[in-house]
Image 1 (cartoon, one colour):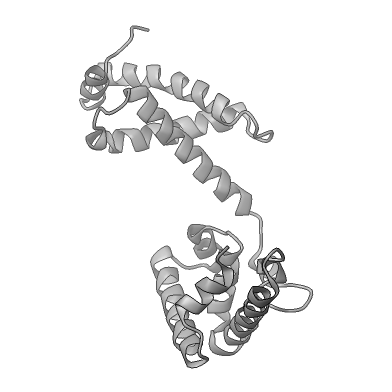
Image 2 (spheres, rainbow, N blue to C red):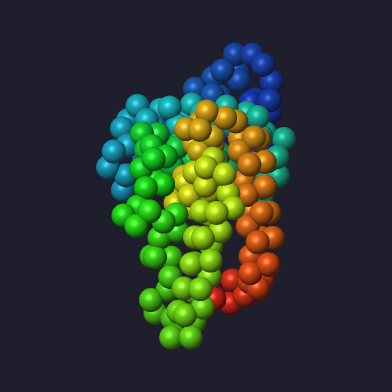
Length: 206
């Protein structure tokens, strides 16, 4: 395969026809090879996964050609897109079989784990953290709807918004509105409790 310049990659991928098809066929194994290095420490990633990631990345690359500014080699830019696609898919796969019930259930029935507190903080800061976490737990329990509690707990534990929406049988826009309303309600009640956003940041900043 002949080396292509940035301009040649952009030109050939931007036009329909056999030359574009050939460029895509040339690009795919390059992306797969780069992904194999980038994901070498991921034991569960199979060869067919790499092929799927590369295929998805090619679609993203074709849609994003207009954003390529030539500040790096085209293949470097394309590889970054492929790695981003791969890690997004891996995060999605991680949560695919996790139930929201598992995420929202804890031994003490609370929605915010004690592990959020910083055990290395000083006594005064730890006391403030306990006040903040205790207040948040109470307000989440008392002020939010069951769906708001479920969504907030899942997202606090790292589940992507898209996956939370899928598990809850809704769409991302509706979930975003649900979370916006929940955060707004919590912020209002926290202010009524005498806890400002700055107070909360101060409690957990190192």
